[in-house]
Length: 257
Ligand code: DGL
Image (cartoon, rainbow, N blue to C red; front, side, top):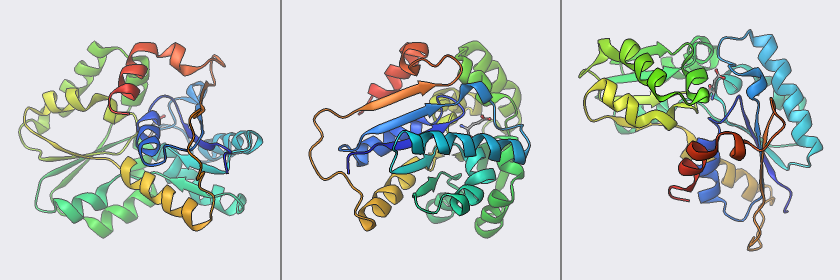
């Protein structure tokens, strides 16, 4: 089946998920939908996020996508249940903060969960947190951080992190990157925290899960795909986001693909 896999986020953050998916599923085609018109999702009401995501899923179905990946933790936390109930005929795979990975691999260590306010306050995250709580965890709602990353202003990113991570300096061993924009600034996070950090994000396990689901449903593109097609659309300009976010975007995506 060579129809694309649809992936969306409120901007470029979901590219960090797309990258892991392409590594595991190199023969698939992709349609990446960067909804920067509605960025940030993190401070919006649940009903607004559900409405936005509903329209995006419709659009991706119109584009003939065979499966949909919600590459935004906030949208997953608020809208995945609604979307799965409404669109029963298409697999919908949703990212979530990799807090269980800490439980499985690094339970003893002091952990900081960084995510949007919407994700941290969501019922979905709170269930996960209660289940896997290592009792050495701080939850940090990073209001406004995804917007700054979206703007690409490195000074603003550094100032934000120094101001908001200062109290955790040299006290944290694990960081859960609970927003798909944050893997783009790992280096800056580590600098602000002042020591070696083990990072956890949900992209690789999502990619494996997506592969399993497509395999089970016999929906994988089995042929070698020499002309792999990855379409990137940005909603605010209707342009290809590779043009918009040019250097940063390419550097990130190229690194080890
Ligand atoms: N990348 C989204 C997430 O994973 C971002 C947030 C936003 O738009 O606030 O939560």
